[in-house]
Length: 181
Image (tube, rainbow, N blue to C red; front, side):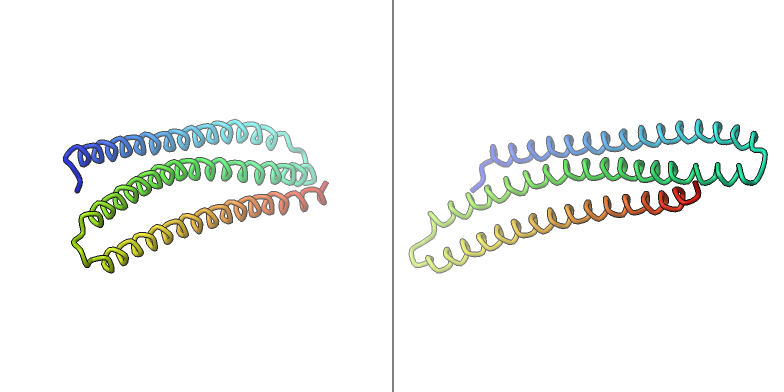
């Protein structure tokens, strides 16, 4: 059985984890705000420069050349912004996952301890029920580990797909721009 001290320690650990996760969430929001402010400042400065350049255009040929020259950097900057956004989201998500895995592992250990305690004090003749309970706990642990592995694989695949799509988008803009030059 759980003692009052164990329950209090568990509650304290849960609160510490909650406050830690709240701090990580705010760090993620701060990074996002910083990224958006920097992107806005850069976009504003570039818009001013491009407007000045547009005002100095003399003919349609020069305008088309300027337009072609603007497309590739825009695609690259969009891809870089998306990558930073993705990094912030995955970093924050990883912190949450790590904390939740730690909590789950601790809860599993406590549950296994509770099962062991109950089985040691089980009355004679309940060996079959004890074996079934231990088997169920082992199956639950195996299922949890399988889920963790699946989530990791899915995350890795999503990141690889994101990188591929970003690179493809940038390369798709590079090819027509290179032909126009």
